[in-house]
Length: 196
Image (cartoon, rainbow, N blue to C red; front, side, top):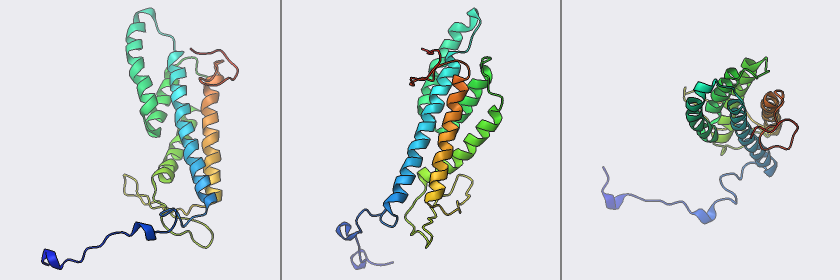
């Protein structure tokens, strides 16, 4: 064991770090594409929250169950505002299944696609991107999920653009599950009967 006085101590010289460290190894186009993916997943989460509201607000209840349903509704809406994507997918599926006006015939397929997208979202939003891209511009984020599985797919601009497009398609599919019932999607100026 070394004497405390004999230990050499060091400190990061912040002024000598590269400009935009630790994001300096990737081109601006990469960060723009990644930012657009992250923003699109935020839009998807907001869309699911509004869809949960839509399906729970338009569900019919027998007169004697209305008060109890109303008491359960506020916590449902609060979770729709704050749950992460996985919880929103579960709540959305449950809300659709409980609403007899729902017209979607492929709900299980849609929720499966949403869950797969959620897995990629976690990598893109929570991975560490400080590794140098390879000679093809692909980057391998450092990400380990709760099952100790390491993400091993190199990511490039085409990958990010494809994921962003798919997340947009999923959001549109969720919106359509509401508008196909004849309702205007909350927060939009689209066609249909306003819910609130």
